[in-house]
Length: 238
Image (cartoon, rainbow, N blue to C red; front, top):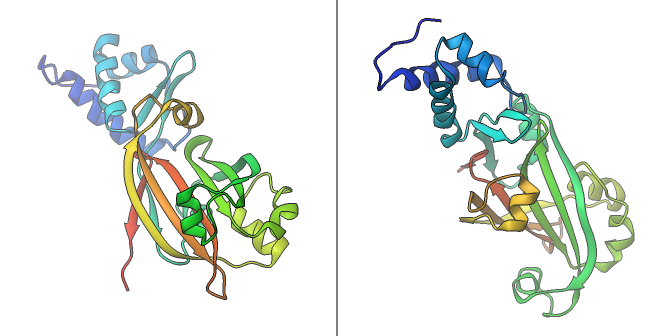
């Protein structure tokens, strides 16, 4: 493949063509050919190829995985924030394969923030579930779910994977609606880096959500920590 040979633009030209190839031939979760294969394809040396890949890593399109290869991220996924928004359904409509797995299920005393959100007393026991969501095998967000209704605990202990809200609808007859969303940003800490397989201090979207059931009572308070390089939130206005 013919690449411009101006010394200051060779790697940028490779990066541009590689980015176009990502859009045309790859999906999130795919791995690129080896650096040597890519260097041969673009007819450049490996140092130049690495600089091109670094450009796309910095843009959030690729991720280096030591001993494994170069992972395609393909940001961003569009996620609308409206009352009936559903993470899994939305991503499936975009041609992706989302999954969710339970990391934690416990009863614990409510912190002041959780108690205030759920309308209970600080220190009261609440249900705490933690889930990890992946898209095409790539970890995207960790969600802490808090629920005050302890009668749901026996059923929720049986939840292990898939959509938590679908499970609650099927097992408990609950249909939840998003009533409030608050969004902030912060840097990833060590535990979150391990869960999301990202570098320390990577940017995270912190999304705090209140979900109500049909009688208007708050049923769930959730705190989602989402990779800032993987999701683009869309605020929809009627």
